[in-house]
Image (cartoon, rainbow, N blue to C red):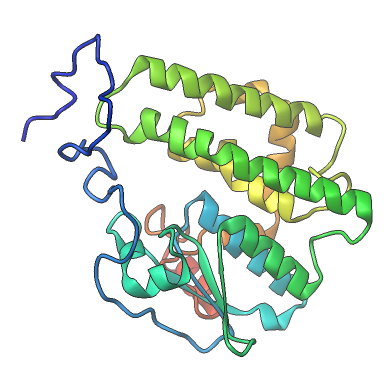
Length: 290
């Protein structure tokens, strides 16, 4: 099939009414469609824990598994969970069971079986708040600190489309390299990195001196994880942001973060990915495999 972008004229003018063309190619070209809803029937599995997570180890997925592992490390035994892989590269997110939890067909999605009826939670930020409030952890109760936590949590939710959907797509996944698109998104990513570096020059964590869900939300999108995955760390000159890197390395050193970041990952070096997590011993088996 001829790539429809090959013959695009330089003076392209958008049509009066947009209509989808042939698949554009690229990593997600075959599964992107302009409509929502399930595309096939598939029930979701349910494990033995009260919290059932359906996800993949992307930055958005890592936010939740990091929080769950931090809750367990802090002694909240009822935060134990099953993490089932939803392979977004294979289109698992369009199965009827998953769409029933998240009609937007995006990972992660959580079902809490401690409530009757069960509670569905979708959107990573919503899941973080839900779990933090459920267990009374990693979300300050003092007014100013709580507000600051939400400030940075919402900042991340608003910035992610530029970092992942914009820069990541055009730099790493698009079928052709478009200079204008890469430059446009790289400009915004660099601005965001500077925002974080400037703030962290005078704060230990994003909300101040407390480690919160804001840090867990922002961390997976930063230099050593996301930009490393895109192989863009040199391109973005991330070494220019020493305060951001200090914060990043401090969080990376936390054992719960080291566990949470590998859950529902499908590839990597031995011991650095765990397709599904159903018990704490799964981490030991992943380590033994290396």
